[in-house]
Image 1 (tube, rainbow over the protein chains, first blue to last red):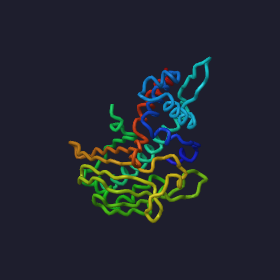
Image 2: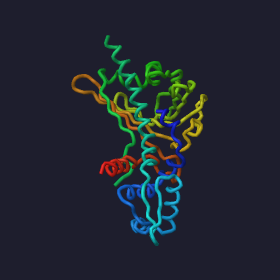
Image 3: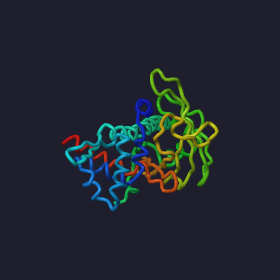
Image 4: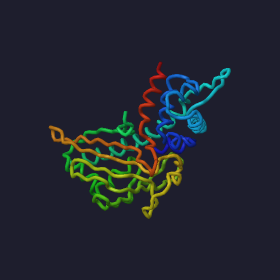
Length: 111
Length: 165
């Protein structure tokens, strides 16, 4: 578990994902790059509120923005999203290793 | 769609032992000491006040890398549901040796949720084995705190698809 964790230099990822709207935004920009207004249309929120969410996600490097003419395009940063995933995998790995040990322990009973 | 239905980590294992024995492995401190630390780790402390509302304090000791010194990982929480030989639910937070909840930052994981919830379900199979399912989810840390971990797996699934395509 912990090999992963110490080697990761993550900042604010988990805190950024603590909000349902922000998680939803990530889901939308994983398959395709969207403009800020396209994202905002999906929510019953002011553009300012959406911009604030985007700022938080950008700071955590979960999304990146680029300008194309007058439009601002937003996309997910797969490597960071993957880092978050690795945390979960690390937990999974820890449990699996514990259960390997438990399995051995239970087998000893049968002898 | 309910985000709360999403589990973060789900592990299913079938053990070649009766349910009573697998239950005991989780509920008898002396038994738990023998497996809470995985390979190359030990579990020097396993204390439990095994009742609903009771607390536990576990310690896992080991080195996290080839050159890293051995370190103690303390965790504590409260038993929320105890249905003997069927279901066990407890909360899980990082702790110090005295059993006080500490920030995940103490263990170098500043952005981890403060509190997780672990659910273990035990089912007897027809051939006398035990199917155990463990789910590990983020638990709301407080007022207005959205569940940090729920909903991720869907995002990851989509990410995986988008990477493949």
